[in-house]
Amino acid sequence: MEISATLVLVLLALFTFLQNVANGFDSWPHTNTINPFKYRVPENPPYRTSYHFQPPQNWMNGPMYYKGVYHLFYQHNPSAATFGDGIVWGHSVSYDLINWIHLNNAIEPSEAYDIISCWSGSATILLDGKPVIMYTGIDHNRHQVQNLAMPKNLSDPFLREWVKHTQNPVIIPSEVAEVDNFRDPSTAWHGKDGKWRIIIGAQKGDQGRAILYQSEDFVNWKLEDANPFYATDNTGVCECPDFYPVSINGTNGVDSSVESSSVRHVAKVGYLRMAHDYYFVGKYLSDEERFIADAKFTGTSLDLRYDYGKFYASKSFFDYAKNRRILWGWVNESDSEKDDIDKGWAGVQVSFSMICILLLLLMKQHH
Image 1 (cartoon, rainbow, N blue to C red):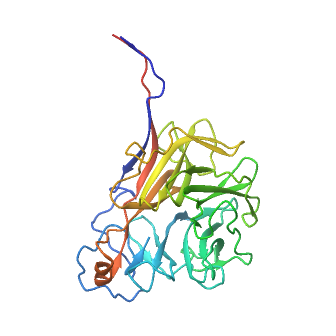
Image 2 (image 1 turned 45 degrees about the vertical axis):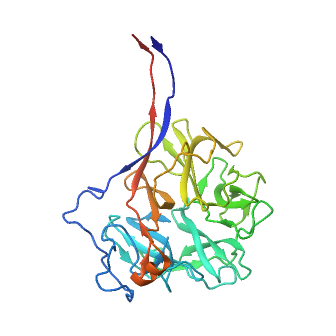
Image 3 (image 1 turned 30 degrees about the horizontal axis):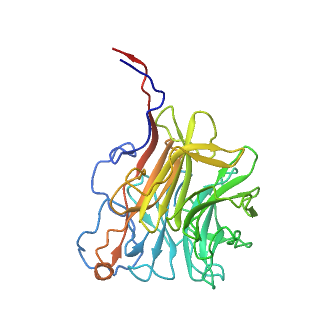
């Protein structure tokens, strides 16, 4: 019998590497190194993790590597262990992704364009090596708008202080998205034409969308095409979109801006209605600004998910130091809101995973 095939399956593999992640550690569990916050968590709280990252207290939900330091920015409610207005960007740093130093908040509501809350977003390293954050602000009308923040002092290895751009908001909702469902800008990638690109999660009617914007200077952004970059019907809002290349020739990660025949692209979306993260492997046609997925979303068990259980709102970043792409995910392990309030905290960041593509090729066989 002769069997002939070229490509049998493309899988997004998540290889958890919790041991030896930073060239070896002598002890476990690892605990937070510095705690400047005043705890309202009960002494010896039950079920609180000692390995997975979480803030000292209250509710939480974009990672970055910069000059030898890993930065974890996270959605945090400093007032309660529940979701609500007043969400800030918490900030912690690490040299090894295991031992964390908690810092003061990086971004807090302060201006008309983010006075209600500072919601999720992403960090990008610009061509000159400087980091910038784009985040969603909930303005005084409760519209969702996109804003920029930059480090105040680049000589500070922990980048403790961030300042908001004077031209905020840099992107506002248009006819392609509902004003209250337009959020979570992705890490940007730099195209061969010299323009930056990002995607933003959105909803129009009952269609979940990822909307693509372009910019030459990272400040002035344009919607080049009213058609969504990718979309799924009957899913509701698309949250925390992610888009990145993966190598087909090995397990090393690649920078978000890489375009070549040796990579394929992954589009990831979170659907709030389902509270799960789904991903699509496919081809990115940069000249046409299109992403063609190998398979369409079906709303069934055939769809590809990063993980199961309560894994949601994940975010990847490229680790330049170790040439790998790392995935973080949020786990809201809550039993009830009352339980969260009683124990004084809610939500953890699950252990990181390395992302690569496995191409399983079936060659001709003769029997």
